[in-house]
Image (cartoon, rainbow, N blue to C red; front, side, top):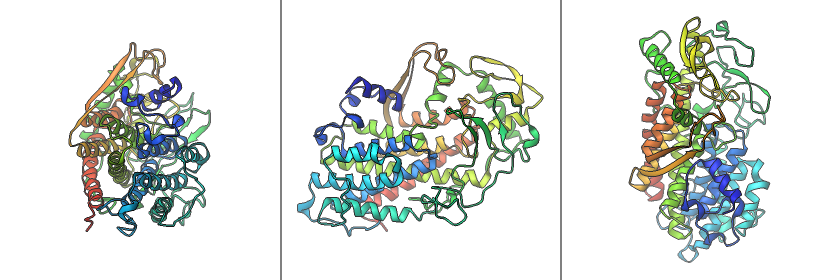
Length: 509
């Protein structure tokens, strides 16, 4: 691995891969004899899809759905070469005879399925990422055959069926749903409108309580992003309660019966006080936990983060590029991505159902005119400030995500991801870590952390719990939204796992 590629892995995944990573070439260094490399073709396509997510401007639920579609297409193509597994769209109708079930055919079918899905979902990366990978693998991206006597045809047909199904699943990927913005992918067609006027966070602005018409409801923000553009938030994924799930029996199956604590209640006062307490006492470790898990713009976002962890597990457990390794990776990513996809549906159903207020509005509104002790902004440490000036520990260019607070997406995604990895490996053991050099903070560069700092996760559960807690350190979520989302995420994974196993074992009822 080149120094450049090693740096790419360090910066993008923030995982200490060690020798496992060194044996697995990154996308830009795939050798011609790719099947002799350390990774299966499934991992290569997962890595490519994650690059598509980074380069896109999609929100977390859209990325979760996209990764699930890629790996469902992969699974359906692979299932045609297995004795028992049945595809999600054709059942066993694509089953190939025994003499066709070679590793070469499996890799071909998987690659064409992944390519067709990835290009459909991340069209901006076709020329720069997906076409080059196909050519390095020895395949012609222009081969659109659906002839089932060829492995390319199996892959193309499998992806085509999954895509046709998902194009009408309520996500509005094609921008053609009545009521949406014509031609705009994933545009909202439910006519959601925030009840509160935007909060202006640009330099020189002050909190305007009159803009908050209902302090229990979500308020969009207006700020300057990393490109220098002024952004006024729109609710990302406002239509997501209409998306067809994978393992859930209904979108609202796990909706909270009560929702978040409301302003003025004892529960709200307790949570707000706890969040201010965390803000006032942030350590370097807590700050870096908040930053590591933030997964904001130009990253693989929280759904993709757990795909990186699954890549780590595949390498740790030496799945490899042989037939059994390909099979293991197909099953791992099929279950994982669909569980995280359903986590997005469960979580966004709560976000739309309760349209709940973020801490940046709630604390400013509730504590305006009162002195509170909290983090005072970059390089200002802990200080006394008027509650209306409170800030989350986040980059000013992306101060809070553009959707409601309850429940936590990070917590739901992470609990679901951890549960799938635990079930797949039959152990909670993880054993990964990430090390930050001194001064590597993005919020307080040069000052935080004061010295090199390492985060370690002995178990998948440790990592998931830290992901949830990170959003409280960062001032993005209250405790209730974190803890209740963790429980929901585990339940989502249980249902998705059962559904995935029914396809894998060929006993769908």
